[in-house]
Length: 138
Image 1: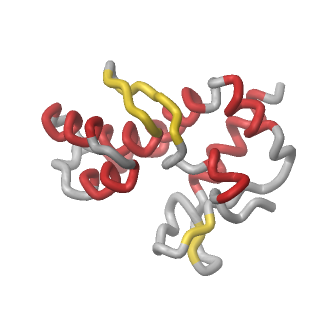
Image 2: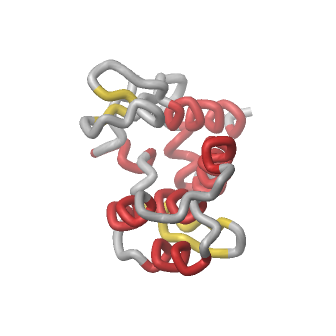
């Protein structure tokens, strides 16, 4: 079981560099793309796109004008971005190298939707990564 997307497994993190595209805009990380997808305001999207770190993009994403359908589409958006990331041959091979291990986005910042904090959480990010791994392995 992989319980942290740091160190050897940092490539699994949405903060790890990998160019992705969302609605015609290119982003330097999945985090940048995901945070920009939260809003329909192109000015806010551009600010997130140009933010210098994934952490800054995440902070900006907390302040955007949230699109009305966000809760309905956020998992689909994440999956789309992750599929792009792991279509990069080097990253695809790294994902496959995790074998059949359970992938858990363990965290200490209270994210119980995308990950698991203090043993509690849905681990939606881990589930998506395992789904994609299973599909690219076939």
